[in-house]
Length: 548
Image 1: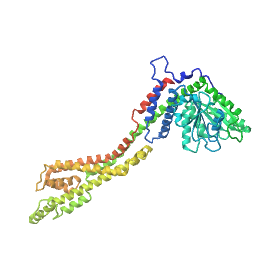
Image 2: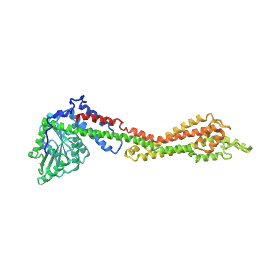
Image 3: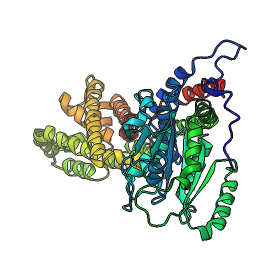
């Protein structure tokens, strides 16, 4: 296994892509294309907990890191030194290896794990200005040392498997920044799963790779070397530069120079102008296919977000239909009047009761006397009858609304995104909204009742408010009140009561269906990605094709 140099002739020209191709109109400059892509990727919110959301959010984060930390800095400053990141498992000897290569203690090394808590960036003083604006300086401590090869910036990265989550995140970020990732492992750690996963990820994203097998006991060198070769072959990495450093035994300080000579010489060649540009060009060029694929996958994730939002919208609305239809049917059937309102009517309309004068014309002097006496409390009795009827109607609609809410929550519980949405709408919110809706409903219904009863006249002396209350009670479903309306107000009164009941039935259904409103409002407030977000990303992916 050895490094290849056949890209050297292409150099920095490849880094600028194929924007200078003569056929067709000149494409948008690469930097501008990538800046626009970064803007659109960063805007992807991926709010909903869709089945692919976890992967999508990780993909978005990876794209942002790759573009902002590697591609854009590299495209903006082509002549900046190649960034070589030494990464691997805990105890692989990365820090000692860096110190040995530059022949100076530039990064902490020792037996304490993890030694490297903060990344260290070692570069030649004359290269420092070229890295002045590079984002690597935001996470790595710069160390200037003349023993570093010109054209290279060597990063001693935290352990990929560090016990500290922050260190693991830094290690991942540095892999995204690398022009070359040197996988440093040992005879006892080369089989660890996590570094190999990172190795696969780096390969897929076109990052140039080298491998250092460090601290290997000579007795097991052949077996370990062959096993590692086989693993690399399985990963399609048969041509990567490969270095073996035998175990130096108990050691304080740097490794003997003869043990790191081959690796140091490789870095020296790598730092040479043409070869450095070749590595950079190969890494940048290799990033395009994976970048385009990730952008297209992210666009598909955004499509899923949009479809899920529309599905949640439909689910919340559909879940109220049965309860709304039942509320309409119950109001039309007068179901609210079967209990207390009917009892109140029977008590008031009994012989000598305050509503008995509404039941039929008096016969004989005794009934006429009772009628005269009952008329005194008739207005108050009709007020109580009407209030009782409306109270039962309200209870019916409150129960229907609560039933609709339960149906919504049950339907939303079928998906993680639905569960996420339901958690945003508390029962306190829905109860308050329900009461406000019903307050408005009954206020508006009162206005309609007033409009439709104002011209009704009774065959017996009844005030306008008494007529209104009698018609309302009839519309609520009180059978005795309906018969009294027909007797006293005739067909006009019966028709008015029927129209008022129909109005209430439709409004009741609408009020119950509106149980979905709080959930839809919460869904809107989640600020799901707009419908054109996926389209914009696909446009960016098509623009990247110019440079592949």
